[in-house]
Image (cartoon, rainbow, N blue to C red; front, side):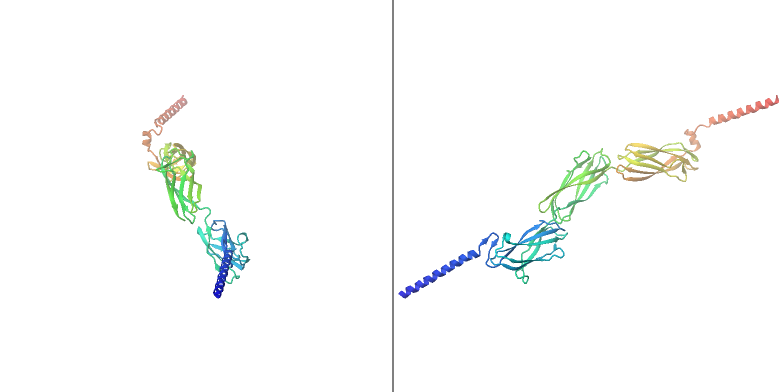
Length: 428
C-alpha cells in the first residue's frame, strides 16, 4: 500500500512538472510571438517590405518617379547579407548606369519604424505609359544574392497630370456667317489622354455686347456623357447673326469642362475665331459717254455700285485695250473704299477705232478686298453703244449742220461782195 501511494505521488509530481513546463512554454511563446504595430514578431528572421511612397504621386508619362521601399525585420534575429533587387519592366526603366541592386548588409532584429531600412530607386516612366496602376517587381536575398525571395507586385500610379480634352477643329457653314442669317458653328473635341473622360461640356460665351450672335433651337452649352481615350466628338450649334453685325472676325470665348478617371474637374477657356461677312456684290455699268461713233474719241464714265452688305476696300479699276479700242488716258484708276449701299465713278478717255459694229467692248479688271481683307479679282466686259450718222442726228447726239451751212453761205456771199467792189473800184 505504501509503495502504491509513493508511486501515485511520483506520478502526481511528474504531472505537475509537465504542467509547469507547458505553462512556461506558453508564456515563452506569448513573448516570442508578441503582436507589434507593424506585424507579428517571430523568433527567426522575418522581413516585411512595403512601398513607403512614390514621388510624384501620380507620376506623369514621360517623367521621373522616385520610389522608396521600407524594409523591416519583424524577427528577433538579425538578417545578414540583405540585398534588394528591382526588376523594372515596361513602362519603367532605370537611368542608364544605375544598378538594379541595393546592398543593405545587416538588418537587425525587430528593426521597425525609424530603425527600418529604406530602399531608394529613381525610375523613368515611358511617355506612352498607360494611365492607372502599373506593377513593379522587387525581390530580396538573405545570402548575398545566392537565393531570392520575390515579393508581391507593387502598384505605381501613372496618370496624365493634366488630362487633355482639346479643340481640334472649328468649322462654320457657310465659311462666313452672313448678317441677318442663320449659320452653323461646329467644334470638334478630342480626348488626347489615354484614359476615359466624363461629363464633357462645351459652352460659348456670347454675353459681351460686342458679340452679334444668338443661339437658335438650342442653348449655348452642350454636353456628352463620356469620351474614350483618343476618341473625338463634334458639337454643332445653330447661330443667328444679328442683321446689323459688322463684317469682321469675332473672337468668341469658349469653355470646355470635363472630369477624368480620378474625379478631377477640369475647366478650360479658349478662343475661337468666327468670321462674319458676305461675298461683295457690285453692279458695274456705263453711266455716261461722249464718244458715240467709231473712228472718234471721247470720254466714258463707268459707275460702280456696292449693293451688298459688306464694305469693299482697295478698289482699283483697269481698262484694257483691244482691237477696237485705244485708251488715251491712264488705264488704271484707284477708287479705294466703297461702303455698302454706296457708289463711285471712274472716267476714261478713249479712241474707238473704225468698226462696222454697233457696239464696242469695254474690258475692265477689278481688284478689291472685303471687310475681312479677303482679296477678289473680277473681270467685267461692258458694251458701249455706237451710232450711225443718221442715229446721231435723230437722237440729237451731235450739233445740227445747218449752222455751219449758213456760215459757209455767209462767207461765200461776203467774199463775192468783196470781189465785186474791188473790181468796180479798179474800173473807176
